[in-house]
Length: 421
Image (tube, rainbow, N blue to C red; front, side):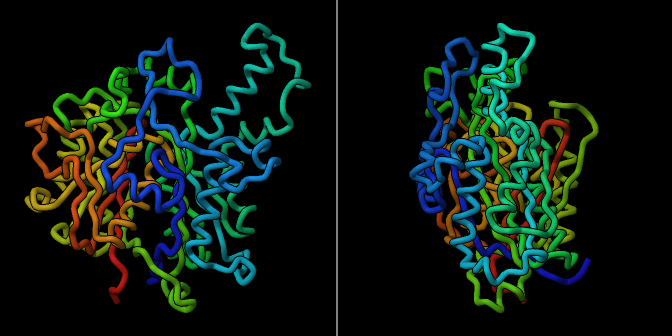
């Protein structure tokens, strides 16, 4: 590993409550929840009938009729977020060496919506076992191959360097950015488009989470259903969206006088090798990822000013995460704010880690900690400062974001305010 440093110079977000970075930031700092009754399909038969949907008009977002016809909803999110991040970064695509530009994209469930839709067409809604390929779209192969999502981003920016698809469940959007940082540090590329996208609000995904009772059944109060760290929490609410980040080598960014939101100083990932959905209550594996990320960042635990929590509002995650933060940060954990934006935008699986990195970069830039919405009845077992209900102005220099995913994946990233030498 070289001494090359990696910074974020462009942000693009498509999320519930706000399409575009400005709208997204206004929504989460206002504490406004975007969870509601599912409108994407008839969810009457399901245990959990609520989700955080993106009010997304592909035409208004600038996609052409051909792009709308070809691209799955998750791919549409990724392309729109990529365009915004590139515009925000002020990178001139024509001046980039394509071989020095790469893509690292995370997604947990890929093109689920289009795959399910096309299967229903091919099988005549399940009535036919022998399927006639003539009835399907010519783009079915792209929907089947998750790597097609990363390819779409690469085509958008003419990236001819490494193009990678990361699928590690709910840490995909964190891990994809961590991988991109490594490629820049190693000198393989100068610029990476990195992030995550998922559009999982479909019958099959909702049925999967219904089966394991991970999602909230609070259907009569959708807006307040997702309650991280609250005594009455009973599961997460499915979300969707994307965030794409322009990452650059620091001197490359300085040479073009780029605006720098944050520097990524440390990243680490661990696995608990324990259970597909279960978590140990002591949080040892997540604590180990946090400690390793701090070590890579050469940052002491007491330098962290804010923790962007995974905060899913399941009983076991919130206990596990709280224990991990205390184990990794010691007594300092009690002196800093911790919050979960999932309380407002839902859990968008492989996308949310990148959306949360974007949140951390914006928090550093704006000096604001977003709140944990719906935290009205604190759980006495959980005793950190979870920033209930209202955003908080605070000078931030160094922040930590963490993720935990089915399969035992645990990831952590440290970001610092630009200006350090």
